[in-house]
Amino acid sequence: MKEVLLGGGDKIERKKARVVWEGLMMMGLKGESNNKLRNSMVVSSSSSRMKLWMIRATTSVLLWTCVVQLTALGDVWGPRVLKGWPSCFTYESALTELPSSTPVVLPPKRVYKNNGYLMVSCNGGLNQMRAAICDMVAIARYLNVTLIVPELDKTSFWADPSEFQDIFDVDHFITSLRDEVRILKELPPRLKTRVEKGLLYTMPPISWSDISYYKNQILPLIQKYKVVHLNRTDARLANNEQPLEIQRLRCRVNFSALRFTSQIEDLGKRVIKLLRQKGPFLVLHLRYEMDMLAFSGCTQGCNSDEVEELTRMRYAYPWWKEKIINSDLKRKDGLCPLTPEETALTLRALDIDKNIQIYIAAGEIYGGNRRMASLAENYPRLVRKETLLEPSDLQFFQNHSSQMAALDYLVSLESDIFVPTYDGNMAKVVEGHRRYLGFKKTILLNRKLLVDLIDQYHNGELNWEEFSLAVKEAHADRMGSATKRWVIPDRPKEEDYFYANPEECLELSDGMLSST
Image 1 (cartoon, rainbow, N blue to C red):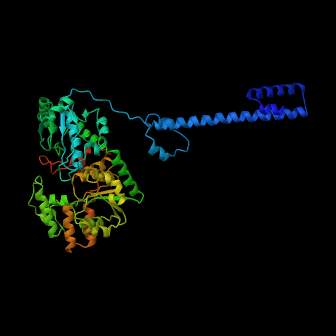
Image 2: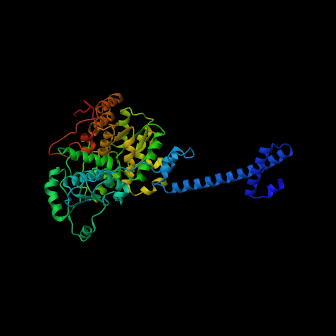
Image 3: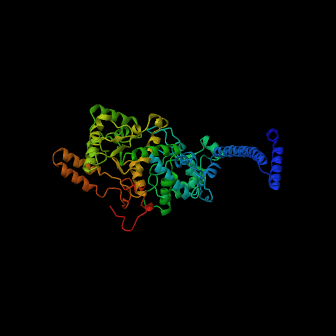
């Protein structure tokens, strides 16, 4: 019987096993019959286990095949299937490899009668253009026109060829503002053809204009020509006395809609992480680059060859209108960036910890190591993006000054302390953004007072304790706290810049706001 069972098929096995079992149960056989029963059941059990193993193996292969295929589908199904998957997927890998499963909720489109199309060409560096874009969005919204994605400056000193989408997330820019204004990447085909033929009304708007100027002067031109091109955008909207909804829209564009590309954002986060791993850090916006010195005519500490080089450069650029400049007088008026040597003295006087990391947010410092020696001696933990990252990390950004400036902007926002040595566009826009983020510590240097105190210290009129005390007292209320924006009627260039202190957009507790 054993031989028959071993040589038979599945049906015969099952049938014989069943017959044997029933017979034994009925007859109560023992002895040799019991041995045959055990043998029959062993063979049947082995066959059943084999089939069960095959079913399990096949099922496992099918399940893993499904998982792999669903993961490959990425954005649509992957996150939903793998959400809550066991620990073979780590939290970190889920963050880096799987897209967010949270759907993006877009604001509803604003419906309005379109009065025409507004094209703009921004001028200046990254942060001058950033502020201008905010202004142009607010103007387009107020005029009920369609804004074409702004063109960035490619002809200035920096000669950066970057397009808008190379620096900013253009799709986020368009969709996040669609409840306010319609924004297109380019003109509709018929109008685009007209523009390409030169049939376009181009003009520079008047600087520091009230929004009513755009309603009364620019809107009729848009309605007449269908498309108007504004070829200058720097400081074209007044700082003060604008409708509250205009001021708040300027903030919304600046703090929310103008998001850098994922490539810039990711690299900025890497730099910040590297700095945070080694403790707190200060960002020093050391505006002591060749273009700044040539433009301003500030030559403190430069040798005769350098003064001659800077002068030649100033005369080489026709749009730098001021040519004959008295560097000493300009410095005493507080209109020059602090030198690296003056900066080192100031930081020491403010009791900035000599062991803190100092991230230099700037281009190449004019004079190189010779001019940086004093600062490096007093603060040996100086770093730059070029020293924190590998050359390959920055390869894509080379010869793209605005993209490099975007990295510095991100790091500046996240620093424990931000110190600009000159009140240029980056200094002002970062100052305002840090106020918006909760009045983060920003030391606003009083350069006119500082150079006078530094000269007195160098001349022996003040000892170190007197000098340090005077510097601290002068800056006690210049740490980026809440203040009223300083308004000077009819002199907008001299008053506080809207983007440095957008008080209409800041969360203030009772009694927090003071006047200066």
